[in-house]
Length: 154
Image 1 (tube, rainbow, N blue to C red):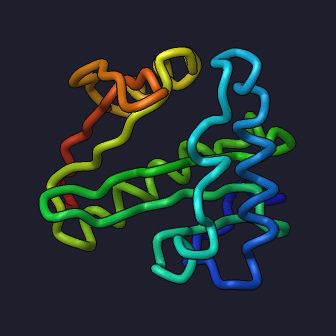
Image 2 (cartoon, rainbow, N blue to C red; image 1 turned 90 degrees about the horizontal axis):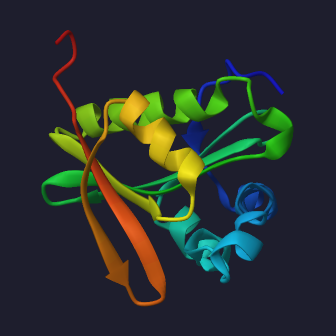
């Protein structure tokens, strides 16, 4: 899998790969947090049909779910298959999310991660995200982040 593959909008034929990458990326958290992470139970077919899912790699090794909202781009999920860890694919997907926000004219990206996903709490600040709050959302204890997105060239 090349980490230089350009992300693309997923199509219906990517559904099985999206599920497999998501499950592989999030599955190890089940024991730690005591429940299945929300992306594992997402309606991937509906997300693909809505144009929110973007994939990269041959075969697909990275998935990012981006949902435009009124004043921001919501990064709903980012998943890198464990076989592609350390290749820069996660950073590439985060940079791609920033590009998409700019292209859509949205001034920031918002996302959250489970409070027990410590790895993400180290990653997102390195990418320029600031933690805005910790909040219980149903059964999930989440750390919420945002990143201002400058215009191209800034």
